[in-house]
Length: 551
Image (cartoon, rainbow, N blue to C red; front, side, top):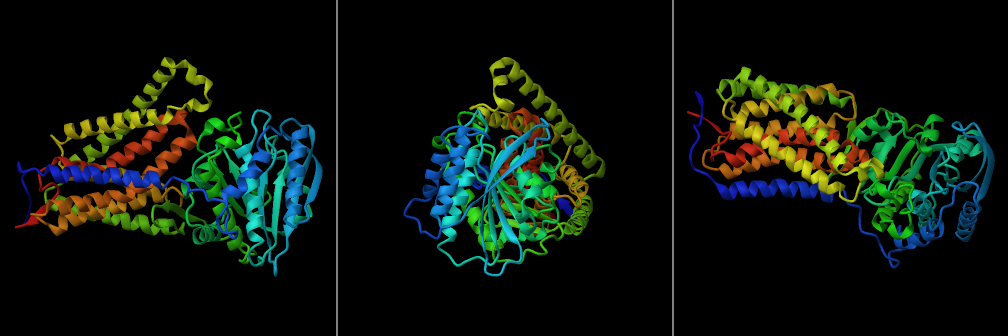
């Protein structure tokens, strides 16, 4: 027969402290994962990308506003032409009249292009960035840094063997006025028909790690190439699912509408600099520029030597994971994974019910109670943020409420939500067993995994839940009566994938969605807190905790 241990008064405070330290260590690893690599110096090898070598271009391009049609815009264009000629290339100017779809007025744009012929090209790789800026900002990051990155990438490529495929570098004009330069290229330039892959680079801030946030449909080979060639990039298929439902546009939107396959990249931290006077060279994070260049050079070298004729295959689920890089697999695998997940959940429920550590009715109560908690916290967070805006009316002058104290507010809200969740546990444990609470919350995660079948968001719920269920199985089956530290370690390991996936995600959601969507962002925090319930139980309970033994 199997019976549950009765609680003992024996405590292990040192083990509980180590468990708390372990949770914080995983959070720190997740946050560290979001940082761009260190910038290089002028002494770095000539075959590599160097942000130090690219920065003089940024200073030349982004020291003053240069919107389309201005004298400063013409000066930047001439600088590009001169730099391309200095590298030994023959640039081309595409001047065209394009009708702005918003204003219905014709605008003359001047794109700068250069083609580097490959040794045996199948299709061409298109590398694009826009060289115009808004009138209110100097455009050092948006998008002068990307223009500088292309120039430095071209310099580095000249030190290496020629690519097999043609490389087309497109510096578009009038992106800020309605993507007009990209529209002119796609509609009027003959090189458009030669393009097999487009790589577009943008900025929505001036700091942070670079993200690959958008792909064309049928991205399987694109994701494979990205994972194989780039050591580190912030990217996941949730971004793909979210962005394609948003009204936002970049030059890549034009390429995508024209049926060109490709990927879209951007850095988005420090949104306060976007389209403002803060978008100057001295405020650009050179580590971000270094990361952009590392990605750009690696992708050009990879796809520049790969057949580009048949890139469109089944979409992939993908996500970056600390230490592993970009994890990816075919979208159809989500069905099999969710079936295995459901079987594992049902089996654990059956085993726990048989061992009398779980009652069905109480588990359903735990499920409903945590759902109510999540909904309640959403309304509390929404009300608190609205109250803060009333108390600080000056926040309305900041775009999307994004102030210098935003991260402090995020930390404060996380602590409030954590405290309320702990109180929920302390109250619920009087009527519910630890396994009932954990399985009730796991049922919510299982529903979310099933709800996101054949969806890029599926990885968010599948892998953390797999790890949690496995840890609960191991603790129950190993039955290590006198090794509570080992059992706690198993439970911590079971929460590790969730912490390592959700910590960077929550930070990036906060940066991307901005504090104006604080309550939405905290929904993910509260889901994660539910996943941590076994660890919370292990911290507070006696040495036997979840353990069951045969007798």
